[in-house]
Image (cartoon, rainbow, N blue to C red; front, top):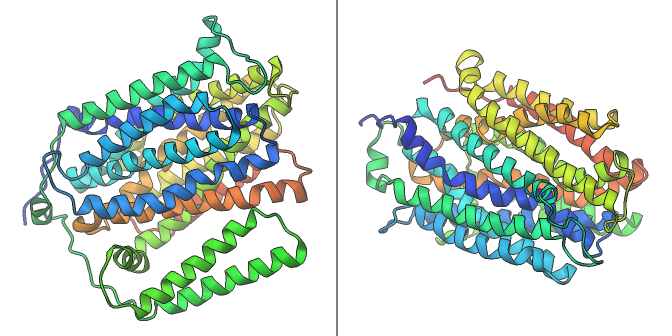
Length: 486
């Protein structure tokens, strides 16, 4: 065994630079897609269902891309071919999205756009684990967080800045304002350029070289003969939820959650019975046999991303309704509020970029777990504060906590995880780990609308309060994860 060489600052900079472009596009999606949906006629209550396509795509795409990238080797290397394919497809979707003439076309473009982001994004996580030794991984993921913050700041601010430069910020009914269109066009250019820079400036270790390093842990065999037990539990829960939906006339959005549980149950039963090979069986085997640290981190991710998804889909309707007193997407007040949400999203990403500089120091001084606990609790407090703040400018203070949480969520769980993964399966396990990003988003899309209707008179503000509580739960869960001190 030999030690994996440490990389210089600029080598880490180049390998992470592509994330600036990916997050530029991702931030445009997060800050503006709800606005586009409402402009094209969507009701606030329907927005979560329209967003379902995005996380559902990630649930399917990310483990498959991870599985394939673990087994790819060619002229561009192992992970970089997927960076390029995802960037090209995402660029085309960004150019098309603000020109969608109908709501269903916009929903379809969101599906394509998010799938493309996932194709490019998922291998970047494994890329850091491939390239960096254990002691540099927190720094590598923090560098990704820095670029995520910088890219998202500019992207989120673009409609606001364009409006101040005189670009029209309103449009006829059913049309997308020019500020949003030009922002999406810029996003396509930045995304493709940044990812191309990483592809051109970074080389990869061949698979056999990775396994020769001292952190190249072999994959342990997994006994799947008892997987049927988990399948039965999931199937019974799904069937019970279906019965409850029918009997109590619950929200139709819950059918997705019930269906997911039943499908998962059938797959685990199938896994315990089938002995032949194949990609699906291998991915399911890896899911069933995930390392213990990954199982515990799954709860951290679950509560973190439930909160983030609530924030992304409900901040625009909450702020425009509460702080700007508007609900008509064609009104000047609504569009001013929607632009201010872009400023708030830029602010939390800017604070995240600053937090990314501090996080390696925090990790060295306090450890990964304590640092993550502090950061996500700051984020939880920031989201809860939306319930008491009425001056929209003071919401910038709330975004300080959200920014620290965002930077931490994008770095420290991955640093905790990568030390516990076999090198040959870094990609597929990073993809499976993203199940626990996608599943809470699907749950949020399924239940948040119903929860707001039942308990909060349909007021979107309280989705942010629920998100804040969820972030605090995520911080408590991270204390259960064992931390490597290598």
